[in-house]
Image 1 (tube, one colour):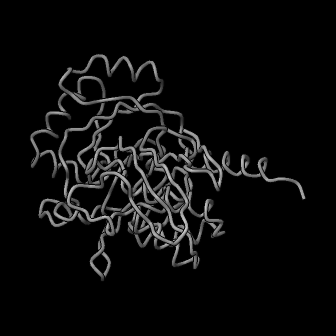
Image 2 (tube, helix red, strand yellow):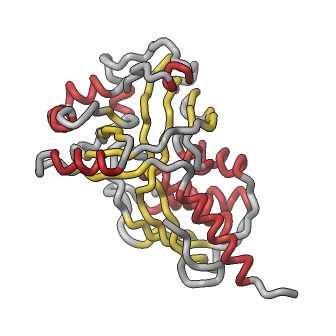
Length: 301
């Protein structure tokens, strides 16, 4: 996963990595109705790919299909680009093409990561010069889990997901599975079965292996037979977990070999694949590569 292309070239290519929530607890609710969460975000070495092209005139366009039923102006990547334009008073525009791999509604963070990649990449391509704190503040206006992709580090998260503390995680490989169910987050948050007052966990709890669970798992397993079927299949090779508030499931393994052996043992009807946990975001590696290329390509005075 690298960024190719320099400012002024036709297109540049950028990764938008997926994420996992290694656990997710709801510990309360703010006065404005937003739920208070605790989770650990794990960035993956797998995800979508974005192609960006800087254009004159200031227009931001999404080329190719968007999420079904979402108008171009409401597309999260277009909104991200326009927010950056406004915040930086930038006169340039961009064309955006997304090669989707992350399933929608799976809890793998696809839409959020795509938006974060637009913010980080166009900040470089447009030379708008915002720092990570400023980009993360814009990201939070787009969604609670967009800032973690902007910052690009595995993290312990609290609040509505925006209070992040970098958390080193051991190397790991994952078998990911998509039940094919688009889990509606807003509906799930309103579910009467949802536990909203779990006692707060600590980082020590997580590190020591205390089972912390995912508040949405029992709700989705009870409501969606496809999710329950995937849990049953994954249980044959490990201890499955749900990621985020989506329907996506995963099992963690210490090595690639173990993950691939587990994948091979799963039934053929299951849409599953293997992904590596990242130590740092592929997006930020791509940004460093782009900056190095840009510096090399700049002629000496």
